[in-house]
Amino acid sequence: PPDQPEPDPSKKTLVILGTGWGSVSLLKKLDTENYNVIVVSPRNYFLFTPLLPSCTTGTIEHRSIMEPIRNFLRHKKSAVKYYEAEATKIDYQKKVIYVNDDSEIKGDVSSTEIPFDMLVVGVGAENATFGIPGVRENGLFLKEVGDAQKIRKRIMDCCETATFKDQSAEEVQRLLHMVVVGGGPTGVEFAGELQDFFESDLKKWIPDITENFHVTLVEALPNVLPMFSKQLIDYTEKTFKEETITIRTKTMVKNVTDKYIEAESTGPDGKKKLEKIPYGLLVWATGNALRPVVKDLMQQIPAQKDSRRGLAVNEYLVVKGTENIWAVGDCAIANYAPTAQVAAQEGAFLARLFNQMAKTEEIETELKTLSDKQDKVPNGEQRNAIFADMKELQKRLRRVKQMGPFEYSHQGSLAYIGSEKAVADISWLAGNIASGGTLTYFFWRSAYLSMCFSTRNRILVLLDWTKSKIFGRDVSRE
Ligand code: FAD
Ligand code: NAD
Image (cartoon, rainbow, N blue to C red; front, side, top):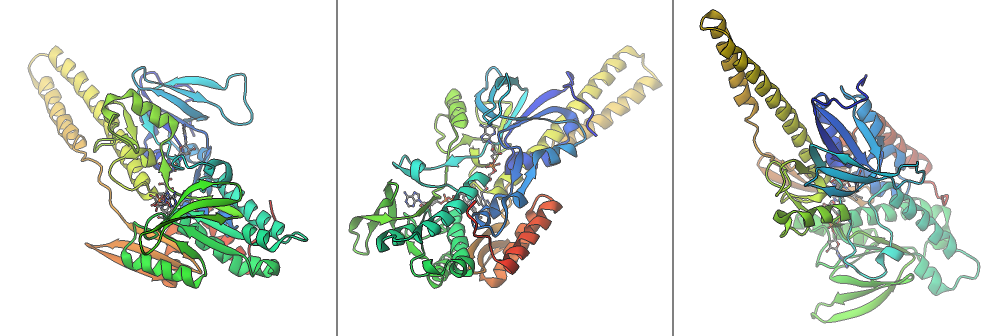
């Protein structure tokens, strides 16, 4: 059990920001005995985001895909400090971060500073709105547990309000129009889950909504899921049609009010048309934007001047223009898509790098001690023995220092598209396999189950799937 409550002055302080995919996979593999490790994140749990769309309809309960960070830390060899706080500023020259406790309960001290020798930034990204008016006030996002809970509540509220006595036909139609903006995987998966909810449960419990409940997916580009192969894009669009989800491609949302969105669509003749689309529920899933703390850090570093989408890093994930700051996941730009797969591999790479760095330092110190000792002993057997030990250590040092740069290995892309179907572009040997359908759905389920971070999560997710299959999803508004 951890037994080092106070930092060890002989060790470097490693501060890790965030408890998402990047930071947690770093923590999992990091040998914490080598550093004074401090984790700072406003979220005291890891969230398995790939299954978050299923929480919006209650196919899975949110706690089943959360894993307390304390659980990871409890199993580390050396104690790791965790502070539930948000880093508000990183001063890279002073080597200090400023943190703020933004939770409901605050003590006498709710903001302070933490010095670091080494820093890993794994704070993820914010939801992009592109400054479109009304999005933040009226739309719901899908990034965190709280977002999924809000969506679940709003779906039920729309359904119950639509069946309120004397509601006009037009208002019923509006309330039951579920609009999803953004045809990336988040939007597609959510639209699929929502249609499933309607088909298997809502229709049964609230038959009055059957005629008017409708899901529309709005995408600015000519097709959805741009990162998938053409064949799977076509398959997804065909499946959505069968599921009666409307896809509105080449339609860019420009303005949002509390009751309708204004979107500009481009017709087959190239003519642009502005239209108002009334909605009851609006889920906004148009990708990522920089967090303020990251933007501020970029502004302090001249080498980051040309970077727009995130912290530019070198092939060892060092933030360009710094020596002791690394970045992982959605806040880092290393020419890969902002996915959990990339973040997890980057985190694991940094753990290996830091473990190696500690080993290097240890060997270098040993070498220094031996060399001092060698100077003090006269020529002879003892000196030769020290010399032999030094040679051995130098060999070890060369081996340890041989760590190559980060290389991402793409395992493939997977997405659920509703009605027990999924699409998968899987990298296999030197080629690529594209598949879509029910079999892929079982592959999707087993792949995500095996990716869950703990056995506890795996069991809970399995139980939730079984529960919603047997009893249906819960339609209480809470
Ligand atoms: P995150 O996992 O977002 O973690 C960021 C962490 O930083 C959080 O703990 C947060 O609380 C913390 N934080 C935020 N601000 C601060 C601050 N100021 N100071 C300190 N800490 C802070 N990817 C896939 O590969 N496959 C999928 O199937 C998939 N499905 C997804 C489904 C959904 C609904 C979403 C939203 C994303 C999905 N992704 C998927 C993308 C994936 O979740 C992200 O790429 C991944 O989470 C990025 O990891 P990260 O560690 O950079 O950030
Ligand atoms: P995304 O960036 O992948 O897609 C956003 C979409 O919104 C784009 O297609 C864009 O054209 C569209 N858009 C932007 N502005 C618009 C507007 N005003 N009107 C209409 N459409 C607009 O975003 P995402 O789906 O949130 O995904 C974010 C990241 O997370 C991606 O890297 C994705 O690969 C990853 N992710 C992966 C999975 C999975 O693998 N199953 C699931 C979810 C997310």
